[in-house]
Image (cartoon, rainbow, N blue to C red; front, top):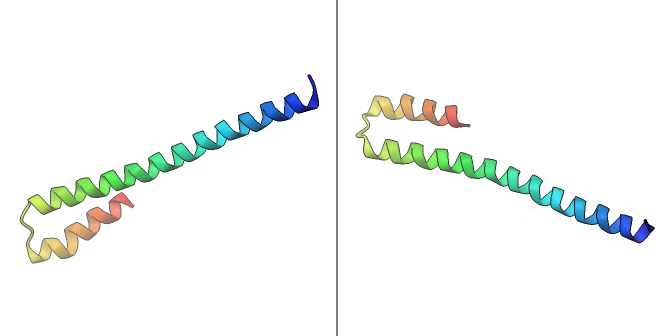
Length: 65
C-alpha cells in the first residue's frame, strides 16, 4: 500500500471517529436538557408552597446536576 493510500485511510478513520465522539458528547448534553425540561414541567404543574419552593426545588435541581 502506498503512503498516500495509508494517509487517506488514516484521515477518514480519524474523521469518523471525531464525528462519533462529538455525537456522543452532544447526546449527553441533550439528555441533561431533557431532564431539566421534565423537572420544570413537573414542577410547573404542581402548586408549590413557599417552604417547598425554597427546599424541594433546589434539592431536585441539584440531583440532576
